[in-house]
Length: 458
Image 1 (tube, helix red, strand yellow):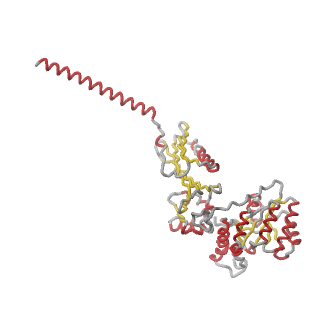
Image 2 (cartoon, rainbow, N blue to C red):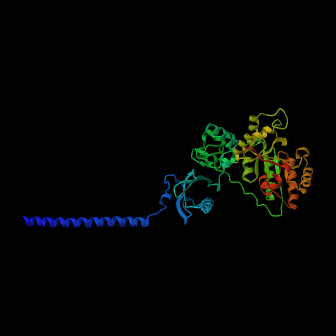
Image 3 (cartoon, rainbow, N blue to C red):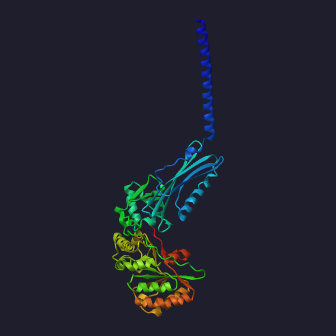
């Protein structure tokens, strides 16, 4: 019995030693695991999270950038193999570190994105940026919006997606959404996304100031040109001929033609300008644009400028009482844009008031820049090629640049043939109003010249 007790006691000692040994091995393993985990732990992992289900277009890429005791940046971005778009995305990424270098403590920047491709035409991209400090206090949070048209190979702004008197429409929607109407300005509508059923605007870039514009209910205001998106032009966009390069040393002059388009004269005038690699601007009446949609389309396609000259040239718009009411003036202007857009998918940017008459009602309604002239050929009065040619040359020689003519008169065609030949020999280049504004804004936009009156409704 004593021997049995002695053996049991010895066995207990062995088990005790084994338990101590196993506990030591466990503790050592745990410490080793902890050490390895600490050794390979990414201290920035919390700042590199992203959403998988919002990346519906492009190939997801990820890069990080850090500067000791200054900042850490996690940047998720899409790649599209589209040069213009990818370059802008790269540029955005490079800009993110610049303002952080002046900070006094460590900052963590997380950038994620949402993207979607709409009907194989439009790419909508939103970057979400969040900046926190070492205590996870949010220092900055902002969204940056990009919308790209693959077919036209360019970025889209609000004027590319909305048309007509869209400011008035957006003010109504803002009121319904509880957003201050005075915030509805062009510069506050740059943050938007293009969806399959609607446009979503974030006024001043704020998520809590959202305005939705469903395509079906707002068809006449939609400027997007796609067969799947309700608008007045549900076709693929027309790509106009490029504007000729402005030649150094050439004197620039813009010929403008009112009251057309004319089924015969307009084509002849365009052909004459193209002989000299020139372009003209046609201020069209809506009733004539509606009657000649193929001419409208041809003018735009050939790279000439299409502009607005009211629906029917009524003297009562602003030239003579009784003056039209606001709603009637609105129709006189925007029905023309409707007719031109339906024919070409192009939304005119410029308006020439009939008789050059402007009153306060027109200013309150017209969202287009108004264009007058400084050389009146008087073709409407003289109907004589030699006389109109003499008038234009005399005024051009003293530096005037915007010529008023009318493509509804056959004598004007004869005058143009004579004029362009003579002016070309004297070193003139024939450009559109849009090109002339870009090349000589100091003269055209100067109030003293009384040529261009920018709209106040932007």
